[in-house]
Image 1 (cartoon, rainbow, N blue to C red):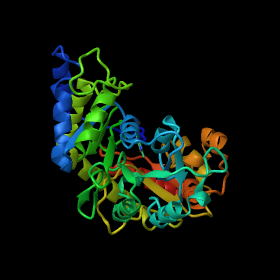
Image 2 (spheres, rainbow, N blue to C red):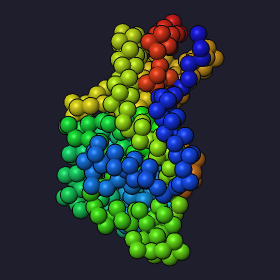
Image 3 (cartoon, rainbow, N blue to C red):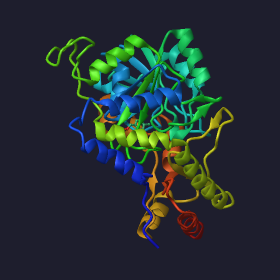
Length: 382
Ligand SMILES: *Cc1c(COP(=O)(O)O)cnc(C)c1O
């Protein structure tokens, strides 16, 4: 049997042809393909504006800028995520204020968000934040393709006048109470690294309904050129966060296949679920009622405390089955510990899930035989 990859893009000849078509034009950047790709997102999500960029991290960073989050400002977010969702605050010398998560879904705990707004001092890191700093925004993450509890979050944001940046980099195509993930806050961000639900190689995209913010983000991704600026006029100190035409052409075809690809991923997740539900000591993904559509990004299981997760992971890898502990808590990353003085025990639910979770090989092109092989191997080892 072929070696099972940890993840895999889902590509057809249509994607290969689209990229080749761009290569036959002189326009490899700032052309029609990016515009078409953006339009596909407006059509899909109902967003007024879609701004394509060259990574999900770049998209989140532009949102932080557009929201006016700067030096010393506080942003409530989750430590159970990929590092990018917190790093974008640090890029601006703003400070992520972590609150722990709902143990069932792994998404940010909205009761703790409220407490952090009302009793901010209790949530400040040991060092690195001013005691009189103000909370400016909330940055929830739709973990593993399941939307955060956005109604609760938006109600708090409204009450306390905070901006909400929804990190939907893991949740393209998911729905919260029948509304598309990414459209629930002031800004939504998607990402297209090859392990995501759809890919552009590298890439990301911001959706928003705010005209002014969209103009600003378009300028900031393009070296600070505001509408009306010439090539060598730069209204702002900007970045080069542009997505190229080859990536956009690939992405446009992937978008046209999104529902088909999401269905295949759901099928693979269902194969896992049916084979793992009766394996003692293994807990599969909990799906909240508000998640009217799950968009499977990764397939993560949790092991009982009695099972040595790391030893099991090593054995699986030795047997040719790639697996990955998921997530490693952000507050315990070396640079976070150094800047803010975080310690093990600060966010116990995040740490507990971090200790017991394992991402199994997962993609839309995985076969039922491969899923069976992974599950049988796990079942014989525990
Ligand atoms: C993938 C991802 C991102 C963005 O990653 P890039 O590699 O910059 O595209 C951001 N946040 C989360 C939670 C992610 O999973």
